[in-house]
Length: 387
Image (tube, rainbow, N blue to C red; front, side):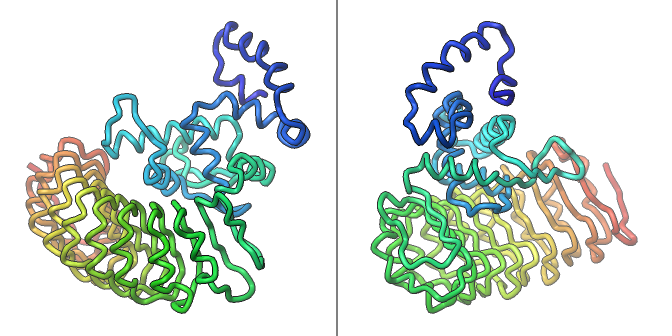
């Protein structure tokens, strides 16, 4: 109740909550009043947009550490975040996502916050209390389902979002492929190549979010190029070595995450065809160079190459990435920044921390009028000449 009233600032708003309190309580079903009466009051005060975003979190297992940035990107991929002017600008939608998350956190629907060490107002990760998770699961009516224990049957009725976590024995995913046709989200961990079959990918025709972290697959099947609704791919900590050329047909793709893929060495040449791609995460991978076509990604906002110890340079055409806001190169082996980087008018963050091979910055680095943070810690012998 305190969390609900926290956002009410006038006597009229408090009176409105009071006048609706009894009415809403008595209209609840018996199960709701027995299990979730106070949560239901907070939930009814949410906007439809916030209700969708909150109930979606039932897809995560209990006690799961939720990365907030990833959560917001997933909400975007599902089409849950709309702005007042119906803008498709990714930056505006992210800001809206932060606002939604802040409202949910203020109502104590999240807990165990980890905050940014530089800015304590920014929450990096969080969890949901078990009772809050049960409530979210109750609201979805089995649309969101998390398999996090040994189960023989998956509840496939109305299933739209499935999380397949570590279980004790191998499971034949082909046996439930008929349920995949309606899925909008599929999360899985540590699956083997035998489980990630072309048949499984063929069944994911409507999927928008695909997260296959820690999976042993070295190559994705070409069938992934047929998943035309796909907007978010996360293959972090997997054994993936390269992406098939067919992935460049995913016109709606917004986010590509390949963090800590220690065998991943290159992006496909056709990556520039992904005109809606706004986030690329390749940190701690074996990428040696970026294809020139990456400079055609007009909507790219974040390029994360942290810890790419085989990467020595950036493409000269990087100036064409006019919406690029953040570049992370810390602990990479980049030897020189192209002069064209100084034409990135929207660049806000340039992370060069620990780039031992970098000896100088471009002379016109001062032209970056929106640059608010440049990290040059632990750079030995760096020469700075700013005009």
